[in-house]
Length: 603
Image (cartoon, rainbow, N blue to C red; front, side, top):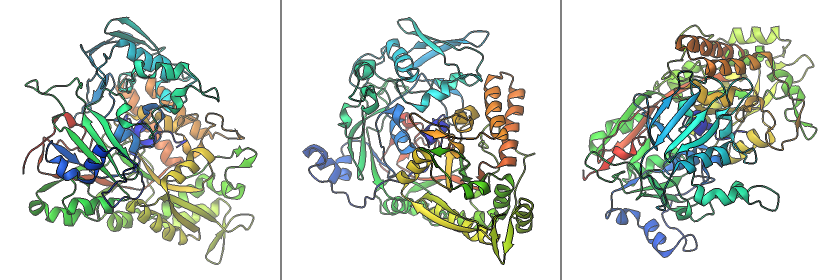
């Protein structure tokens, strides 16, 4: 998403749970040119090899595009990277409480502007080197706060209307002090950002490539030997074969231990075969070649009725945190002198009445019943229902109403030629709607939207496409009309602030210039600026009642002006083999959020 790391950031999660697609892989054989003979043996016969150590097999849709945490732009990377790195704190996904990770404790000054962390003793990197306060200071000062390093993660550290950044310094062997320029309610959660190894990466910051860019910007790409990637999370990478699979091994120096001092995580190895779709996940799970799978509305009934026979459990975490939406490209700017949106179409998209009419014309009740099989809920907010800031009522809602849609279009200057809608200049209203190919829910939703909008005279060219191409259009060229997509909203709304701040790196529906992008003529709408300002104010507000009121206003403005037309969210569901013990499944964290507590037994 110009579009930088939309899922990971918005999850706090870092956040957005973007559903991504990868390359096709049905076989289990890897060419000898792809890996060493040891890797080859393990990759071709991973079920045999898995008999020697506790191994969890979990097919995934999509694969990482980088192993560099701060350069990751999609959630398939962040899902992987979340197991390789940790921050000072983490979040208990059953209670949403902040709990220690690399830090054993912290104190906050009475004015809320000084936070001091105490690191755990004897921390180590996955290569055995000590992890110290110097690594924390390096991560923040040399990477995150260094303008020469292009990373959208910096944006979530910005504080107040001026976007000021914190200062970070070492105050003792295990002490790190953060000084923030003004009260910032969500700051403690921000310190879940991954800590990076200074002893490995320091020279990549100070040394430049031929273009004058820090070598860090090209460090730890997926062409790197995975075993050279050093982290501090529960796992390390043992192997990565593009389009095939990812293999994790337990980090022998991971800091966490069980109640009896046992090494965690107890699951020594994870193998993630890369598949092209959720259908492929389903096939693997049903054939016994997987321990986990995402359950979709299409396969829920079958999966549920076969629980006992298949020796697995279907978990239903309730409403997903992922927000499914339709959005139009509202950017009136030009890239290198060429409008990013056809001015004729832009004239339609930027009319609030047009977007409201589209919202009324989408039959979400049918979508819920037919596509989601009733296993979901209507979505009317950009904030997840698990958040204490979620507005349960009082927001504009666009229930299916064709007549209301047509009245809005006529009031905005559109007319009809027979059954076809035309604008005030006689142009037929026709645009392209895109989504990522292979996601059945989004493809089905897009197909229904095409049909629904034909009822109000709009022609939609529905175009499922390769995810990487879609992301390039959204985040780099900015040349797209409309999309069906989703993002994961966390408990803390500010974790999604980069999506709503007018100059945020994820503000893709009206993207500001990023990096060296030659974008001119962009217009910020009054309601858009108001939403941005409210997100800033809400982060500054320490009174919870007042914070809730501010976030209510953001939800109201989003629903009134519809930069996103919210659709339907399915329930968060997964099937897990019963041999996986201590599962604490939640919509926020899924199955593996408490990986340290999971263990495998013969079942």
